[in-house]
Image (cartoon, rainbow, N blue to C red; front, side, top):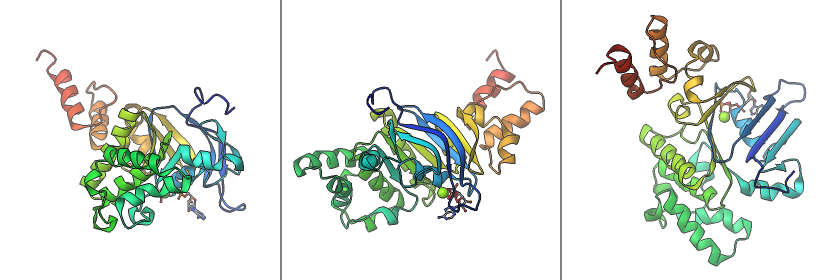
Length: 286
Ligand SMILES: Nc1ncnc2c1ncn2[C@@H]1O[C@H](COP(=O)(O)OP(=O)(O)OP(=O)(O)O)[C@@H](O)[C@H]1O
Ligand SMILES: [Mg+2]
């Protein structure tokens, strides 16, 4: 299956289950989905719904107790492919302080490359390009502990980026940041997806972040509860609320207005969408 990497998907999960305790409930329960190359997919779910477990199954940090995970066509249970799998599927975690290992930004970005045994002359342009892509070139010589949370997460993203992965899996990387840090990290990763075609799995519990994805997969109790474009997912207000999730305020308002008899289309997520659609519905001639 791994011979032709041109046609394989970055991630392919088939009936994947994982339990921490053989006697206990499954943390990931018969999950199947394929992530298309170049897509930006949000995984959304309540606390304990299995998001982090699923993330760790996606780059062989955990192995499925049942089913199969393929990373660029490579089975994560194949020990011989472990290195290649980790290179192709890079992970960024929630806490920026736990993933910065060096005392200088540039050295931190170099860390993964050194582990991979990339020769020095090749490392330099890769580090420079990664720092540039996350707009941290000016901080290359800085001490990471002097940076803001958002800047630290961008350094962590650069460390993964320098490995030239096919897919980046980011597990609640904005959870510990203030609103401006959150926006800066999301826009950096969105840009890497658009400009460099890197496939992104963006795990979050922030609706407004998921709303910016191409596709939203909603997890509940370890299983896929919904899967579709954000406009479709966020129009299912009651279903989301039943899963313990909020909907974006404008999507909730659109639902209320529809129930009150206003003919509004699906897919309203932002204030700008709402203004546009209300204008068209209420004053179509203007
Ligand atoms: N190391 C562990 N040992 C035992 N059970 C665990 C472990 N990690 C997670 N679990 C359990 O597995 C289930 C899924 O947890 P997981 O951390 O994957 O969910 P999550 O969606 O990432 O949650 P959160 O929103 O809190 O990050 C939960 O019931 C959790 O209690
Ligand atoms: Mg988690």
